[in-house]
Length: 398
Image 1 (cartoon, rainbow, N blue to C red):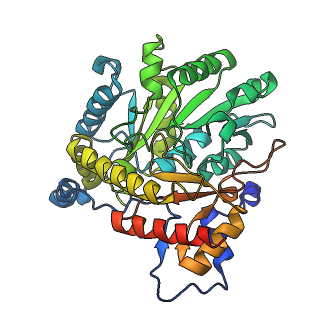
Image 2 (spheres, one colour):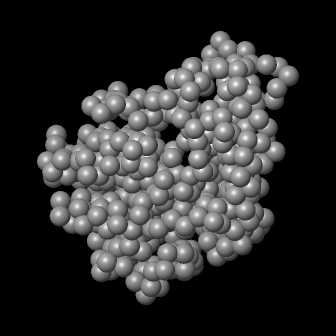
């Protein structure tokens, strides 16, 4: 077996299941799971209709590069959403469909890392666990950049020493962040692009939550739009990852794309011809329908806006939490340890939240996930509001 497998930690939900073992929650309260980042809004009919309409194409092998029409619909969306000139996006070289960003974020590291004992993969802390697993199985060492309240829950890039930047081969950024929902500013993205060129590393921008924000918030910026804006028009060292899971309430479709630096994507395309994970043709047609429609995304945002407003109106005076810049998570400070908070909340109110330390790692400067919990507002409005009232009742008993 690959010895690097022994370096992988248990996934957060495995740790959570172990934490809940032996606890019997109240039987008169229906369980509410705020732990999993899965949207529970209905998948738009246009997506399922397109999928069913093209089931006859299951008799064909799909190509690694995907349908021209899919890549063109992605280019159109990127151009409109991020104000990128359409002619800057070559559908044959700058865009590659993937079977969900989870597999792409993982396999990308296997493709781009030059194995050496000194290779670093930098990432936010807390983080999406795939980043760490991808780094370890690519033979690199994860380098954690803490995201704490003092830095608005964004990575403190200025804390990274020059020697670490020199060893860095890949930087994962999550924008908007998981779990905090914090978004990078234009200046921060400019800084990262400059650092990538100075120290010769690649930026992998996970932008999967970019389409979930309330109408009174600023639209999250994208790495490619800032790249073009500052004159890096070939998107050198910049690659973005997008998905339909959150944007279009289709996590089971397993559809997304990567876009950016053509020279990097050319090698990643070569890797994927062996790696597999090619998107099925019916899924590609369903994805075309999704990327070509914005109305369902707007309606989706309205539901999240209502949920954040309703939940925060209940919890705002009893829990240290505020609306995120974007995304559908609340990253709340807890009045006791995050582990104890999660255990007692489940035991007394039959609500599952994810302890923050399960999403983070210990560093010389502490564990930024300690005494925080992540609450996903993916469930319907009524269920989220019910959870908020139960959590408030629970806090009032502490």
